[in-house]
Length: 312
Image (cartoon, rainbow, N blue to C red; front, top):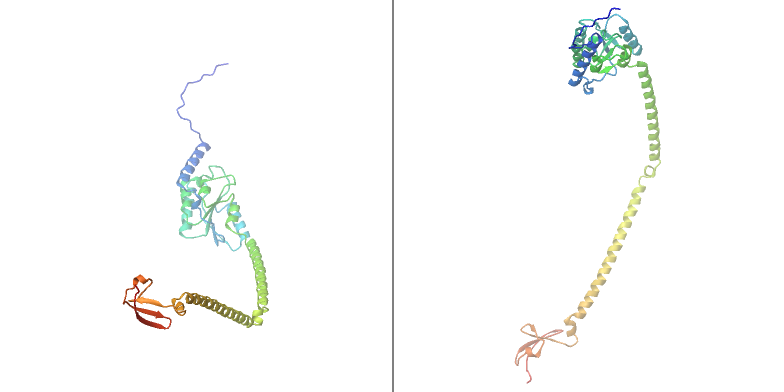
């Protein structure tokens, strides 16, 4: 057997081809947009509860639009589906999708937008991984639901959109409320309201009957008379307290007068004593007097003058 010959070579660069290059570009763009905040929750818009018009960006042929129409009309026959056909794969599809998003916004053609297509390979779904589509979704004033591929497929559009649906049919269910369920809820709330109103009315009737049967309504002046009686009692008690206070104070006053009278020098004078004054000063000692001094004798019934004749 002839031996195989190998040529020596130096590998300077190794690059994956096919899916490898696309996946690398996908991860690179995803990281870039995530760092810019395009995936942040605070930028997500709320999907309207009862939209009148659903804007759909997808191919006008195929099962996607039929599924959306069937699900939407089944859940709410009054909802209007406005289709803006766009290519969902191939060269130039991303530009057409972005342009359709801007058209929907500028002309206010819908209340909410569904971007949808069926499943496919990474190459088939690539228009929804383009930066131009991601920025168009981010800049949309209308809320956008992304329904691209199957449940396991994730595109850049899914991360930027306000809501992701695993399938186009699921997107229609998220965008269009079930009118029958809403009617059931309304009937339920209506019944609950009726029961609440009936209970409230019965409670008010009970309170009314209690008020009407109360003593205040039957004999409205009774409470007034009772208060008059209480007031008279208060007045009598007050008068008794005042009289008692007066008597106690009078007794104290009389006792004080008696004590003061017993200690008064005038009381002493009535027993025959006299107060000797000289030049309006009370004489308490014989040494304060001289012979021939003029003095005053204050008695109980008047004042008399006298001349001192001092004994040697």
